[in-house]
Amino acid sequence: MSLYSCFLNLKIVSAEQVISVEYKEIYAQPQYISNGTPIFKLIMYPNYSVYFKSGFIKNNLPFFSENEPDENFKRANDYLFKFFKEQKILSLSNKIGNKYFIVSDSIPLVKWKVLKTKPIRYLGLDCYQAQGHFRGRHYTAYFAPKIRNPDGPFKFCGLPGLIIKIVSDDHFKIFQAIKINYHEKEIISVPERFREKPISFQNYASLQKMADRKFIQEDKARYQLKPGETREVYFEYLEKTLELD
Image (tube, rainbow, N blue to C red; front, side, top):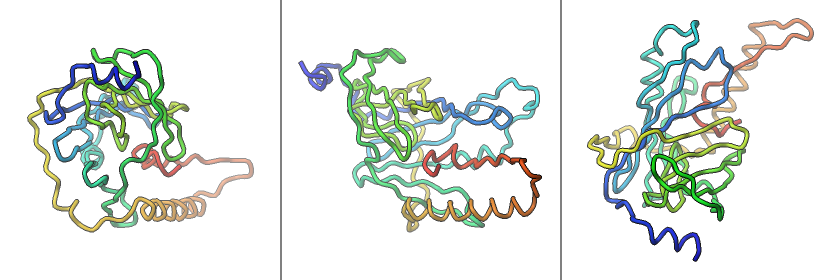
């Protein structure tokens, strides 16, 4: 019996149910920058899904005694929408100059290869492995065919079941589901701003890289380094997009 035949014999959770999943996002960055673990929520409606920051687990490092600034939390709470019928993703860009952009991307973004391995249990669900390449990194995903929504965290989707966990081979980023609500009541409509004409992801990436180069040049002019001295610059947008490095 094939792996896909096994999927068909499982008790299926209806795609018409409004299901939400909370994901813990773990990403590699210097300890002096990481002040905790963000929690994101994916809500899957019949015609679209929305992914957004819903919480924050603060770490115990003494030099991060204050709560995460409200302004940063609200900025990170921007929505990412997936429209499967239109095969389109819409999200709000980082600030470039004095402007934000609505950025359009396509579905699917990953060509997955489902592995013939035994299932692994996560949150009481049998999860199967798949591998794929996404903008510079190779990923292993664990998906649950019992929940047949072909969705997942961030821009990841396109498997025959909900992605429960996904890990990049270099462990730069890990998304792991920590809670599933099969009867979600929260309604998030598509904001009016997301109806404005978007720019393509490729155009956004070019604009962001130009802004980065300008920032680096200004930073070099501002801080003159001595021979042999180095200065580390951290670009926060990499934590959000995963795509421009």
